[in-house]
Image 1 (cartoon, rainbow, N blue to C red):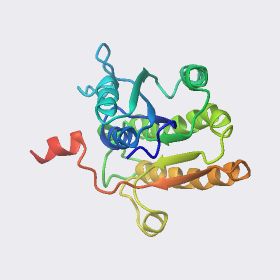
Image 2: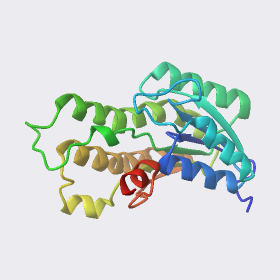
Image 3: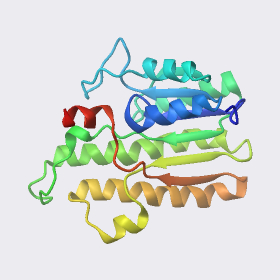
Image 4: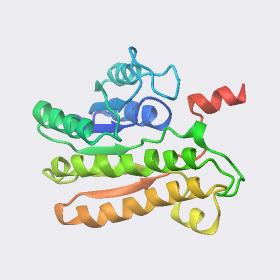
Length: 216
């Protein structure tokens, strides 16, 4: 399957989990995929995980795509701006943006009211889940709208209907996941005049590297 041959994708937060899986499928479809994250073979993020962006890029290559690993902290605007400038210089276009930055598994505290929840962890979660997506869209979308048919995929947890009718067991987690859905709706509105769009995608229960370890 090479339906995306000639297309350029950016998977922001592609080190592991859903981001890695999405990057691999984009590669299998023939896309050139820029894979970003903080953990490389030479430097580990606060996560302390072994997975790296280079590994994801290599998996993209093995499946027939072109994987390009770039270390980026998406909370640092200058790094994101530099990334997009590089993509424009090297490819001249951006067709798909996958906003999958999360990095908060170790920050979550379940069934704890906001006054007992760690404020530092909660605010860090919101920054990682929301601010990173906004910063990335701010710099990436001017390049994406240069070509018709551009797509932004905001990765979240739960559908709009599901989240509206249920409390997600933490004020911070609830806000983070609901905000990403709303973000996709806002971006779809802003992208529409350029024949581009945005969607919110919920992968469901993830068999991610971290989750599989918890099941062992």
